[in-house]
Image 1 (cartoon, rainbow, N blue to C red):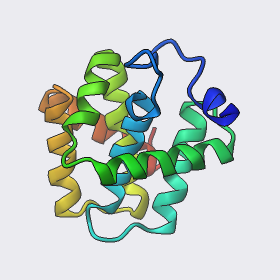
Image 2: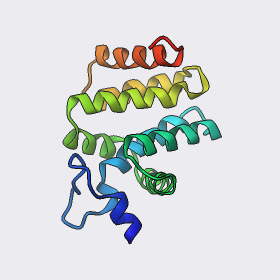
Image 3: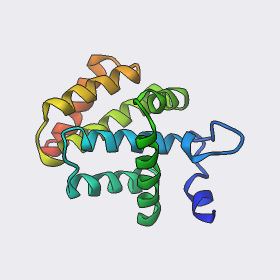
Length: 155
């Protein structure tokens, strides 16, 4: 229980969606579920993609590695229970500003480019998520360009 308290406390952008504070409604679980979906949409979830997701979670949420790993397990369980991505993007839309949603897109692009290439299934999914997050095509492409510049060492 202490792990859950530490994992899901502290950030004002992440208040629980229900009075019980259930982890199934935590925005961090929702964003992590999107990362996991992106990493596995091409049919293979590589060790490098897993490491990238853990790195993102640890850095963005200031989590120790074990808490990032626990968050990944929670998100995986929630993703398996869900029939679509709407419940995750809906929660993000409720809790995040437009700038924060753009940052989520940038992080998704980082997951995509872990292996250095964009597969057609990843391209489809990233466009779908951007649409569900109510971001414009221009915002999606700007996030992609920013990440590509960083990946190539230009940014």
